[in-house]
Length: 430
Image 1: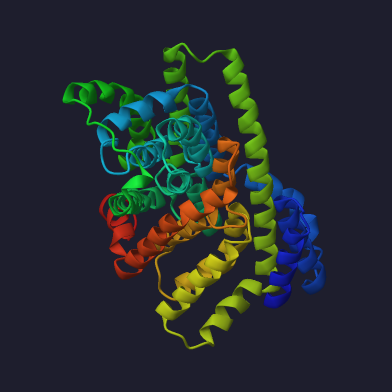
Image 2: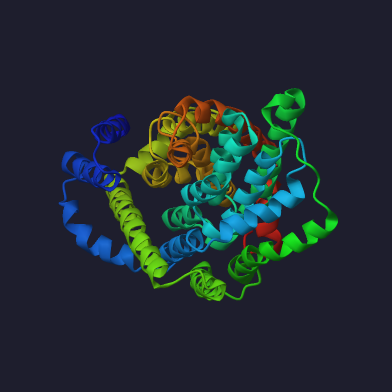
């Protein structure tokens, strides 16, 4: 049954079916093969109940925040301000790329939006100042992945809904690893540019006056981060309520700039509807697949099969990570998350691992999938923003950052408290 499910999933994805359709057809196929009951008749009720899930209401809210910020001109001002602070370090604008991705990630919740926004602003500077393209483009692709690790994160909302894990605890758990990852990316750039000075020109250091004045441009993203994530951490709002606060706060900010009119608002709403429809179709299909797998006993079989291996919990976890590293090269990231969470999380909890901790490990594995060819979404996003040049430049440039992600996974395995300390301290997680 496990083998059949895996082969069918790979077959449907390889046949170029839409992701939501592939997952839904997989559920229908498993129902027809292994269930004596007509499970397909439950799709209507499942679609209705899933669409009314209070937690998932946060998804369109965070998408709308990212869409409005994308069209507000915030990215350009933020990028210039951060360049005043970090542009003089060996690596120059590549540190600015990573810093800008970190700050934008704390407001958008999307890796693709983060990579596209920062790439649009920074790539003209790469060509203007003569940076070697590979590492520069890799810093944008890898920095963009921080959009799903640093809260707020759309992927964490979906993982929390599918695994019945607290989204608030996941947001707390992602903060320290997200910041460490950003520092790790900057360390990669610094080492590469000290080793090979021709990778990036040295920029003059900005004066302290210029730096302090630049801080005003960092106020809006800080205000939005505190409004959304701060309200969650302080216990004033649930993640869903905080996402609604974020939309109101973002709308107030973009109106205050007077550069955001009805045309931009309509484009933001249209983009939100398109993206939300795609995401929710996949989520509904995933819930149906989860229902089918539970009914036919596939989830229990997977847990039982792992138990019969008599491996240590660490060995099983390393095997899970290895499988995801391979799958991430061929399966789209949202598909990878929604199709495997119902199977993997029961195995992980049975082994004694914390589902909140695993949520962060899982998100980092999804981040890796975003920059590993041939289906690394962020690689294509950066190349499309670049509009010319070899795709191999982006792929090669992302490899050192992928290695840093593996280092982060090793640190989380060795020191789980990096992810669990804040949920234990401030959240309701035990």
